[in-house]
Image 1 (cartoon, rainbow, N blue to C red):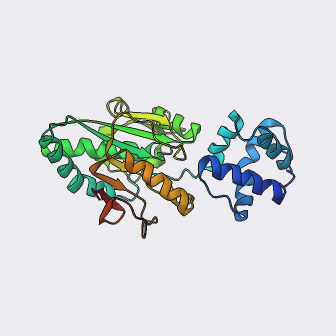
Image 2 (cartoon, one colour):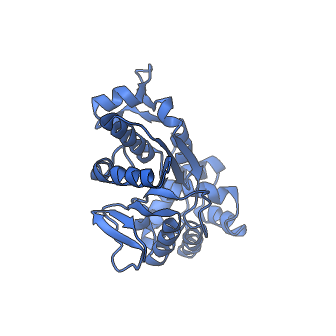
Image 3 (tube, rainbow, N blue to C red):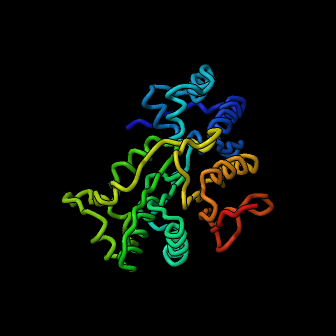
Amino acid sequence: MVKTEFIEISDELFLEIGKMITQKYGIKMPREKKVMFQARLQKRLRELGIRSFDEYALRLIANSGETDEFQLLADFISTNKTEFFRESDHFRFLSSTALTDLLSAMKREKGTHLRIWSAGCSSGQEAFSIAITLEEFMLLNGFSFVYSVVATDISARMLHTAREAIYPMCQVDDVSMEFKRKYFLKSKDTSHPKVRIVKELRDKIRVAYLNLMDGSYPFETNFDVIFLRNTMIYFDQKVQMRVLKNALDVLKTGGYLFIGHSESLINMQLPIKSIAPGVYIKIKL
């Protein structure tokens, strides 16, 4: 196969495209990301029969980013690193502490439904890890409750995977055998072994597109728990504050906010209290 040679994007056009990406998706695009930008988009340029990154950039700029192609760009520029039970101490905290507190509060307030949001869900592993944690909590404690998980992202490709809930077998190598037996179906294709989340769990997850840069988040009811992990590291502080305020607007007082271990909320004046690494509870100010 002959290797396609692409004409590099000019610094001026990259900066212009970067500003559009930051404005629409909040993702920082400094000059240092130029090589990554081009590497990720080579396949798309081949599909379009384009050899110049400038030509592709000009197509996007011509319509001010309001096209299906610019939406597709989110699939390439967003970072979709994820895994089942990533930062596992958060799932242990959810089971050992948060669920007990939340269910006690629900009982006092005669609530009937636990609602959780996995924001920036990527291909869905986080949302399904949450659901497994809830199922195991019910089995361990001998009672059941109604719950649902909303999983959102900006990448149509990742959302498709989350809806299908089909993953390469290697992605569950670190998942316990007990969980594999309970919550994963094994494919019969030994040449490309895959697993699929069982239907009972798939039915508990609602997968939807949501851009965290939107002015407000269109949820009908507030959440008891929000996982907003390893997403804000791609935003500048101004965008982080905007996203956090919008997220907290849809979190119940007394609800839990989880962020990534590499993220920090230091010096942000928000109605939250730190209770564990990467874990906050919403309070009244």
